[in-house]
Amino acid sequence: METAGSVPNKISNPLWLLAELTYKCPLHCVFCYNPVDYTSYGEELGTEDWLRVLRQSRELGATQLGLSGGEPLMRDDLEIIVREARQLGYYSNLITSGIGLTEKRLAAFKEGGLDHIQISFQDSSREMNDFISSTKTFELKSKVAQWVKEHEYPIVLNVVLHRMNIDHIAQILEMAERMEVEYLELANTQYYGWGFVNRDHLLPTRDQVERAEHVTNEFRARIGDRMKIYFVVPDYHSNRPKACMNGWGSVFVTVTADGLVLPCHEARMLPGLTFPSVRDHDMRWIWYDSPGFNAYRGDSWMKEPCRDCPDKAKDFGGCRCQAFMLTGDATNADPVCDLSPYHHIVTDAVDRANVPGKPVTVSPILFRDDRNSRQLVEKKQEPTTETLEGLQHR
Amino acid sequence: MAERAPLTTDTVPELPRHFRFQWEPAQNAHVLLFPEGMVKLSESAGEILKRVNGAVSVSGIIKDLERTFPGADLGQDVMDFLEIAHGNGWIRPKQDK
Ligand code: SF4
Ligand code: SF4
Image 1: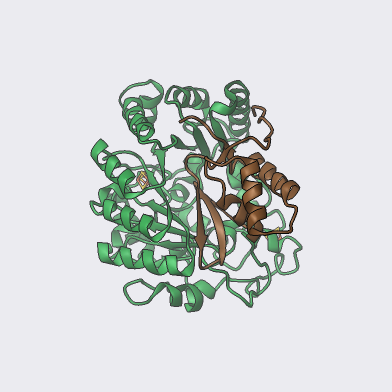
Image 2: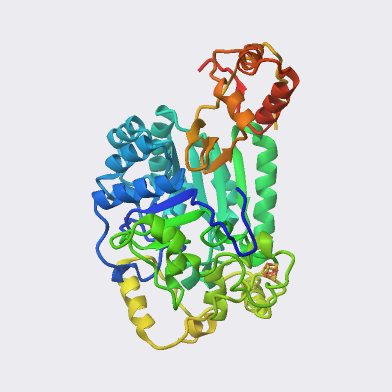
């Protein structure tokens, strides 16, 4: 996948379509990356809308399709969507907690040509306890994994790590082994959406991360080729940002449950940009011509320190949403970068996190549910900037 | 990482279970699709992988290519590419299930 760091005279075509089919979800994960104000969104797209989105995006060249949510199994037309995706030639990935999956549905997905399933481990602390103490949740996940295997899919498990569960890493690995997982993704929480609101509860100490990595490496050495393990450290703990989305409007496109089209699944939060809806426009116009998709393409929008930085073609100045959330201005460098004048915002959060034990924060932990979402929507109406400080002192 | 047995001309290569090879009009190229990833293939790589089907051996693939592109001595190039593809996990020696 090539990408240009300079102003592209030729816009590359999208390769990855993420379909956030619904924001309905039976779970309430504290790290959920869904937008916190999802309860204020309009009606969900209908089946025909999704089929049109799939067709149009495929014409533009998208090949990878992520079917996610919320919980995509909450849509009863998922079978139709899967079938159409295969016929169009997508490589389709279902990203699910497995809750609501039945053998019958799985057989229909297989038959319809679904390529890949990722079971995400949705950890509320109760679920995690159930899991590591090998009770209900473990049994449910194991059953789902067994079906997945019987339908000749590899077993792919995703576990989001954070301050409250990362010390259980040894048990998590052991359970994954018992489930005969083939690919295990251990991803530290990304601080967006609910994860951002709950950040001080979730950010692990540096020690915790190091210990978990160490345990993972020992396990890796023992298990060899039987399980492939990816360990993703939180980007707050590094000093250069991730190449977010491989560059804005370069390969990724997200369509939300209510039909907005975004260059990344968090972009809706950015002020001053309006993102088009598939109800009003076709994907070609949206990708190539809409102001939202062109806003941060190339590098002409960049300020110092990114503008003259040799690494700008490598990381594109990091994540626009993180820059906005932490500094109040999306055109700033992602403050994860130690060249950013706002880098202290990140290191302060990490320093606070480095005090072991209970996190130093006054705000209660917020589970992702409709009631909390509505309250956060109300808060958002207040005329304050949503900077980190702003959120904390409320 | 377990040692991968080196390929020989007798090896019958196949694509791993969840890989798909297809033509992409929008890229004007063959691609290899797999979970959360894609490789865009050069024309020659596309010609080689097109012939990887779990039925024909490496020497069969070379012969077929030399029939299609007469006059070229392709043996080493094909072998080199297949080694790379094998190293990346894009192909594997045929397995029984
Ligand atoms: S992260 Fe948890 S709450 Fe959020 S959509 Fe996924 S399963 Fe539901
Ligand atoms: S200054 Fe900007 S471009 Fe340079 S490394 Fe930092 S974020 Fe990346």
